[in-house]
Length: 79
Image (tube, rainbow, N blue to C red; front, top):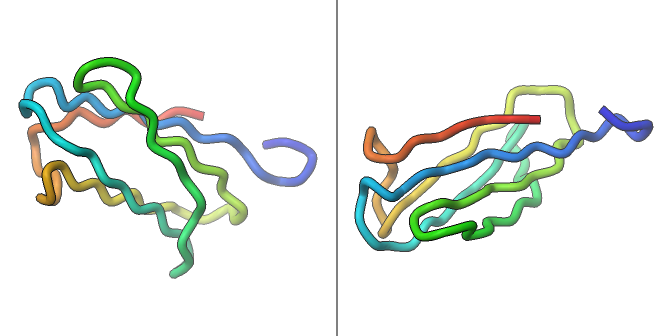
């Protein structure tokens, strides 16, 4: 955490095994939407960046080609 109590969270998403498509994300904490951005790093490799303001669990919902992700996408969470 930085001096303001916020940290920078990076989550890597690998969709390469799911074929071509579009990744959409939603990040929420304590019932509120959290600002985020999605960056395509390489073919099928994405990074979701968000900035928590609360020290509570955050929920990241991912959709690939309009479908909620199930087991075809690898998700790695980091700080």
